[in-house]
Amino acid sequence: MENSRRDFLRRTCALVAGVSVSPFAANGTTDTETEQAIKYAIIHDETKCIGCNACAEACRETNHVPEGVSRLSIEKTGPYGEYPNQYYHFTRHSCEHCEDAPCVNVCPTGAAYIDKKTGIVSVKADKCVGCQYCLLACPYDIRFINPVTKAADKCDFCQETNLKQGKQPACVEVCPTNALVFGNLKDPNSLLVSTLKTNATQRNKQDLGTRPKLFRITAKPGEISI
View 1: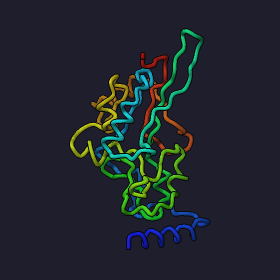
View 2 (view 1 turned 90 degrees about the vertical axis):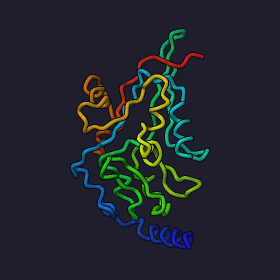
View 3 (view 1 turned 120 degrees about the horizontal axis):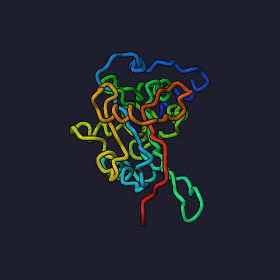
View 4 (view 1 turned 180 degrees about the horizontal axis):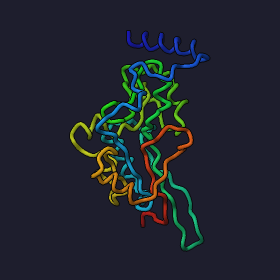
């Protein structure tokens, strides 16, 4: 019965593929001006990241992410400089948790949504029909279809795992160099806010108006020693 429902909805989505999708999700969670007490964000300090991939492995284990896909990866570029003084840069590749999220705006079933209480961009797997509109709309190319659930998937700051237990996201907990800072942008006394105030940061593709909540302290030389 469930498969039949999915097939029907997929065909329906295909029929309307040439029609503009309303910029408002079915559950109305695209109203980013709604006042809220919590607005989660994360900082990746590239000056501290050593490219060990502990964050990616912890994410996979904690959130039961199947092999072959990933919610989080660390992209290595380089080497830069002249031998023997060469170095690499490490960049976090994961959901940016946009305040105006294109993936949410195009979702025809309301499966993609922004949690009004926390600002987390997430997915209701039972509502997803696998149409892949959100994959195409994401300007950061981070969403994927989970081969087990057959639904769109991505980082949700461990919303259904660690956060429910009062913990930090798995990636933050295991980082050996404290390169990740997670917290509430609405809390002026949080480590997140104080770090943002005392460091120059960048965000990806700000010109698109998505207002991402993944901040980067830009890279300097550094790599794990083996």
